[in-house]
Image (cartoon, rainbow, N blue to C red; front, side, top):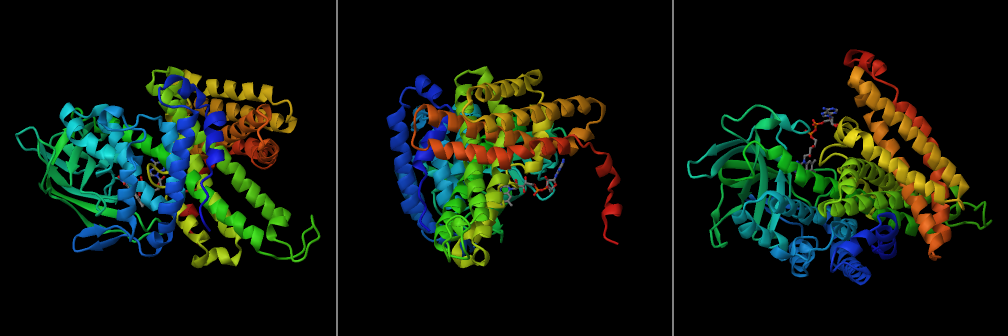
Amino acid sequence: VTYVPPLRDLAFSLDHLAEAGRLKELLAGYDDDTQSAVLDAAGRFARDVLAPLNRIGDETGARYLNGTVQAAPGFAQAYRTFAEAGWNGLAAPVDFGGQGLPRALSLAVFEMLHSANMAFGLCPMLTQAAIEVLCAYGSDRQRSLYLGKLVSGAWTGTMNLTEPQAGSDLASVRLRAEPDGDGRYRLSGQKIFITWGDHDMSENIVHLVLARVAGAPEGTKGLSLFLVPKRRVNDDGSLSAANAVSAMRIEEKLGIHGSPTCTMLYDGADAELVGAPNQGLALMFTMMNAARLQVGVEGVAIAERAYQQALAFARERRQGRSVWTGEYPAPIVDHPDVRRMLALMKARIEAARGLCLATGVAADLARAGDERARLREELFTPIAKAWSTDMGVEVASLGVQMHGGMGYIEETGAAQHYRDARITPIYEGTNGIQAIDLVGRKLALADGAALSDLFADIRATIAAIDTLPGVAARLSDAVVAAETATAWLRETQRANPASPLAGATPCLTLLGDTIGGWMLAKGALAAARSRDSSSPTRAALARFYAGHVLARTPGIAAAAMAGDDDLRSLTPDVLTTA
Ligand SMILES: Cc1cc2nc3c(=O)[nH]c(=O)nc-3n(C[C@H](O)[C@H](O)[C@H](O)COP(=O)(O)OP(=O)(O)OC[C@H]3O[C@@H](n4cnc5c(N)ncnc54)[C@H](O)[C@@H]3O)c2cc1C
């Protein structure tokens, strides 16, 4: 099935759910015309260049040959086209050759790239994150030598955190950094699972690496961030000899076969410090937060692709008599349960797209100095990452389900979306870790003001949607459930820190479901006000979501407040099958 870029939905989400209009007032060069021209051109590129490579990326994948990694067939050419068209620098600073457009718009573009070919999209996605960290913390020399090349896409970036003993727990990172006496360092050790750690699509690769300088404190306080180019770079920016860093292997994995996942060997590699020593984790968080939001967008992207494919199938496949039309054999789309699956897919996608783009707008406003937006960005980031990727897996699974047996057969393509989607709740901090970040840090942000501000905004929408009383009532109940559960979690944290940790994932789901309902309500409201042709559909989707998703929120709140007593008693011994 050909990918159709959801241009209208993306523009609608940006304008009405994420309120990108505030950015248009603020940023010269960003207006309605620019937005629609950018979305249009990116959609064409995604549909015409990347989508046709999605299947071959899955079937043939990246290959490890004689110590180097070859990208899947067609990927290198597509990457050159991507870079030449300037897509890599969309949201990068103008000073370094970028176009200085907002991150929210770039996220909308990336949704289409990831929908078309998520394995490909990961490479420029990580480059964006590297650009972000160097813009914020790179020295003048690092910026002048590396940023231009990263922005143009001539070089790509990676993010090296994980080691065999250090996954979620970065405190146990061991990669060693020895000062070479000349202000530079030599890095030795191994990193695992490094996305696009090696490939033949660009002339150089810039690795951003967490490592520990000899003698540094234990734990996260002793981590420093290093820049390690695959090929060393002379002071005039020209390329020098190969550095002592290489891929030892690539992983066989469930999905995203077009994205090489590399074990990297650092064998005394020449490295330079980024920022101050022992500040590595804080700096890496700049990169991780950018990437977390992008991974949330991957969840939306893969769900959109799975949805389009499922809808096309449901219109063609005929089985049984429709209770609505009486037709026999009827297209399965005319059976209520199939329609339910499609409506759930569509509503959840709209909700998560709104959430991710709203986080993007908050990030852009925060960079312009808006403190309220900064809190919103911080609060939303773990929810955008985890809720949207859980949604992506659920929707891709529904996509398989809708196809019946054909969904389980690789030929149809529905299975690839499910396999590809499955990594998104795992990398960039597992969704469990996102939930812990939410209850451990974000609920209490600004002494709870970030959260109460959100609830106030949702209530303002509730007060305005008098044409959808059912939605208003369910959303109101959801806000009360979310308020009660989050207050309880903050309260119990003092007496028993294990209790909120036991309820962290339900809490994140609860907030995600509630924000999702808010997004759909905002959409219905905006469409009705502007007499948009999508108005009846948006109202129906908001009502459907209220009945099928928001209706569950009081139950999820109960799970969030269940405490840890039972879990504590369910020890591994008790859980072991007799
Ligand atoms: C395809 C792929 C690409 C990747 N790309 C990159 C990359 O480019 N760069 C990079 O650095 N890494 C990358 N990773 C690594 C990825 O980020 C880690 O796999 C992930 O962070 C989880 O770490 P782990 O695998 O060690 O799992 P673990 O940390 O061992 O976690 C196992 C389980 O335990 C849970 N858990 C762990 N600690 C806690 C805790 N304190 N409280 C509650 N639950 C906990 C986790 O949520 C998870 O469910 C990639 C991984 C894959 C598979």
